[in-house]
Length: 107
Image (cartoon, rainbow, N blue to C red; front, top):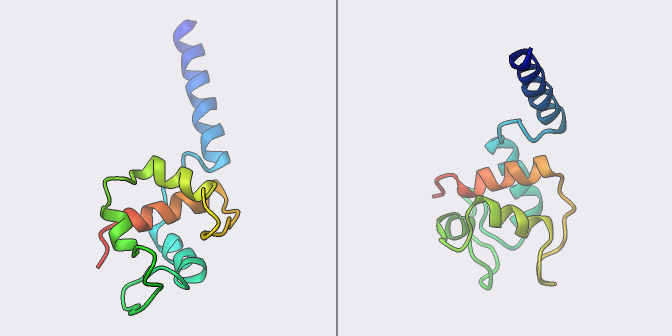
């Protein structure tokens, strides 16, 4: 009886996470699209992009930085702490995708 109940709870939790997007794997291609659309005006955010602002780090630098692991980068993108970076109002799924793209091997 307890074993069946535990299985039911685990199944319900998995289903709930999947439906809210929390259990979905990050999509680096979608993250790249978001970066090209919203971030490339300031950051060098994509392979082949030659120029961004000289006052902000490139995505390659951010991705390799010890300062930003996935969790801290996601928190930063959810609520940028300074006025230079706009609050893009990204969804949790979009943030997850963008973080995956930034943390992937950059050129």
